[in-house]
Length: 288
Image (tube, rainbow, N blue to C red):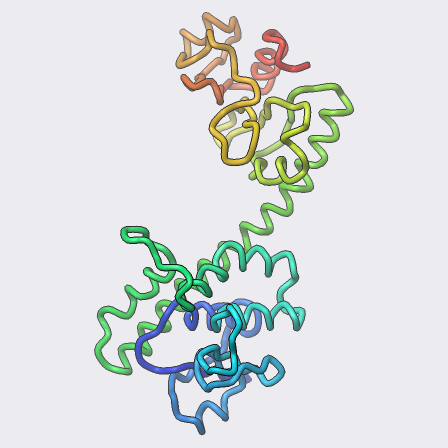
């Protein structure tokens, strides 16, 4: 039997939408919802959030409005904490979801943070689903539409977390190989989200200055590594003579057939082949 969840009826907010999206993502994709304030219907539900006046994870009650609760969580944060405590979400993923989305929803719902004007943040997107509704039935339908949107976001964050974990393994191996070989270049067999893992693993102090990897079109890219995550600077820039050149003009300077492009700010260059990228690095003293 699907889990029968309950929350309040009428207009909804980001926290109750996200709470139910988390339930459907990690507990039961077929979970049903009753939107009501009827105490008898709330008592009959398997799980209740954002209504009911009780915070008791043991009985799956997750309300934060009552005077007896003075903590920082909204119903979304409460449900995520329960999912982690019961082993339904591993701690690293829970932390990632909290940092990426849930803590902000908690802060907005509890009045600690106000969404910025003109910025389409998650709470504002959720509230947009409220706007066409006028009846309880319309709010119920709009709630489910907002939950579907939130569920997609949660799935996307799960995928991002998996890719970050995989990137960490790949980048760790590449950093160790580069250090062992005395190279200033990380070689990757395919593109991964390398920057977060690189700097998490001590990249700011690592002797590498460049990373090279294949693009989806088969070309190879050389990217200058920034000194820190989020910086637009480079530890070492690509050669000044390459700046802003493309195709034949770049080939004339590099002497390498298949030279395609170098950004004018010298943080990325593209070559048609791996051999071309390696030759460019070696002949310009960038490899070691």
